[in-house]
Each structure stands twice: as C-alpha cells, then as structure tokens.
Length: 411
Image (cartoon, rainbow, N blue to C red; front, side, top):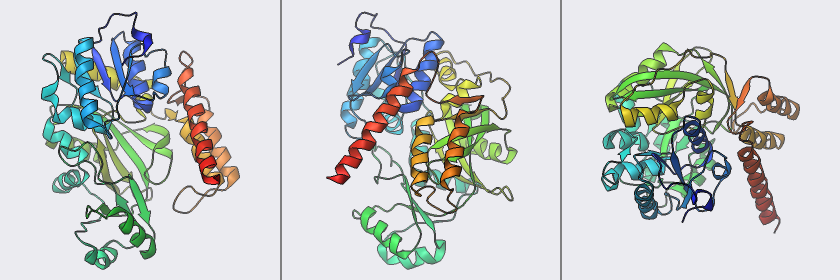
C-alpha cells in the first residue's frame, strides 16, 4: 500500500531508502531531494515525522524489519520492482542485516549500497567486531565472556563495579537483537543479579565490559574497498545517558591515533560506503577505547550534511557511478543539536534521573544546558526553515507518548 501523495506522479525512483525512520531517514531524504535525485521511502505502517517532510513525495508504509523480517524483505523487493529502483540504501541495522543477507533477491540491475556480506555481519555482531578490533591492536574496554551463571563471581572479580552489559548485536543471518536493550549499567551485585535474571533466561548472555569514562568521540567515514577517502570527527557535548543518543555535538580536528584505528579496522573489513566508528576518549590523558562501528547512516548525519559533508549524496554517486567523494574543508567548531531529545533530557535531569552515573547537574544547570542548543550557529537535526513540519510532528508525537505512559501508570 502506498500513500496518496505519490499516486499522481510517475512511478519511478532511482533510490529506495529502506527502513527510513527517524533522523537518518529525514536527513537522507532531504539530501537527495535537494540534489534532484528521485527516491521512494519505505517506512513504517505508522509513519513517523519522516513522512511529514515536504521532500518526501513517495512514501510506502511497510512492516518493521525487527518484527516481520520476511514481510519487510518482500516489501523491499516489491517496491524495487514497482518503482524501477536502481539503488537500495538500508537506513537501519535490521534493514541492513536483511538486505545484505538477501541481496540476491533484489531485481536485476538493482544495487545494494552496502559493504560485503562478511563485513556487514562483522559490524552487526558486536562480539565478532570486538574480536576483530582486538586482533588489530585497537584498544577496547576490558571484557569478560560469561558462559554460565557459575562464572558470576569471576566476572565481578575481573571487571568490578560499575560494569556495562551491552547487547551483543545481530548474529549472522539474524535481523533481531539478542536482547531488548542496547546497554545497561550494573552498579553492584544486587543490580547485576537482577539483570542476569532478566536477560539470560535463554542462556544467551550479553557482553560484559568495564565502564570506561570519557567523552564519546565519533569518526564519520566513507570508504571505498577498504580505503578511507573521507573522514571527519565530532565529539558529543551532551548525550542521553552514558552511551545513549548524542544530542549536542561539535566538529573537532581529527585525532591521528583514532583515524589510524578507523582506517585499520575499515581496511581489514574492506569496507564500502559509510561507517561511523565510535570511541570513548578520557579527557585527562587522551586514552581511548574503541566502542563500535555503525555500518549505516548514523542518527546525527544531518550535522555532517550541514557542513558540506553530504554522506547520503556521496553514497548515491559512489554506488551508482563509482565516483569518490570530495569533502570540503572541515568547519571545526560547528555544532548541531537534536532538540526533541534535548527536551527529554531536560525533563529527566529535572527529575534527577540523568545522567545514570554521578555527578548529576542541578535543575538550573539543566535548563541552562538546554538553552545552549538554541545558540546562534547551532544547526538543528530536524528543524529546517523550508521544511518545518517534521519538528512539530516529532514533538507532538513525543508528548502524546509521554502522556500515554503517564496515564497507564496512573491506572
């Protein structure tokens, strides 16, 4: 089923943005639209704010790839045929996993904008990816592989508290995550025992790592057959939680050591296309630890586009014409903000919930921090003067969800 907005237009689109939800989908849609590239968006049956953008003229509601992988894959193949799509760009991890494993199901003449099957499997399977990083000599947080509950005492002795439990990601061939969380922190034995009870019932254990503290630093990369041809760095000035979504970010000069790590990793994987390589960097001495690699567009890609690093358009040109990107001079100090998440963070800080580890800011500091997201020169992830509706839709939907949760608790 398609929305009525595209019914009077020619049923042809060069690009399919598969699973285009949330900020990456909106950023990619705006990028391609402004460059005159025709595309169709495959989103959710309950459209999010991406569908409200004036740049999205062809929107096809579809199943959630995490919940209905077969239905999602069928929708990708069907839309490719209906619109004569030449390039499929997966926009979320589940879409990347499915499209990569079943790229042979795409119609003849349709290309997948992704690295090779083994490389994609590697970055989606966090255990395998960390093993690769360790093999390459890239520093990672201390880790413990729990194989049974009898090893809990050894786990505590090895890592101590607080420790981090992370979702191990998607094993080869899977579109769904092993556990229903991204990360959680266990501060003591009582919390660890409760988390083990909740998340190891099927004997599939999370990843266990020491908690390393520092500033989250991301390298936004574009690679061709393992050769990194464009890379810029930004640091997170404000986040939702320890390793949650980046809210306020600043472009910084690239750190040679981190660039070398990213180049070594993507080179070993012979990576093609976009990748975001994440590190934790300790402020006092610059020590760094590798965290993960995102093999698709990251949530804050709009901030890169705003400074001329147009990763979605580069992806289109590379996978359709073989053209390498020519990035402009980096605008060091450029900032971007996700205002809706910043409002949520303000609410959580007001209640004393965030951050999950001390020190926690007071209420006045929380308000002052929130207002910095509207300082002159700070680019918005969602709001645009020529496309204001997605920002409004995102806030209204978030308020409805919050009111619904509060009503459910009161009942």
